[in-house]
Image (cartoon, rainbow, N blue to C red):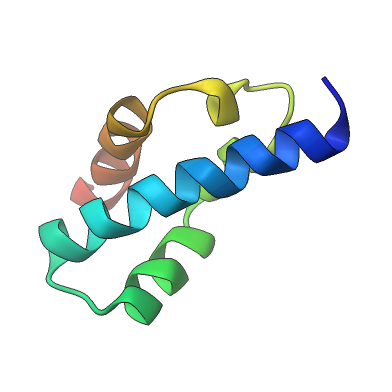
Length: 70
């Protein structure tokens, strides 16, 4: 997979995650993006070795919720 293809998958995943974050945490789109980009989950999404960028949004959202339930 090329870096461009991987970046496309990451961006598409984030587009799917932001509305879920907005609804779950009652945030604006900007607040949801900030929360996502500052999260450990996003760091894992960007880490090629984890393969998390290749997973579905619902699966990744479960990771995200777990991170913030601690």
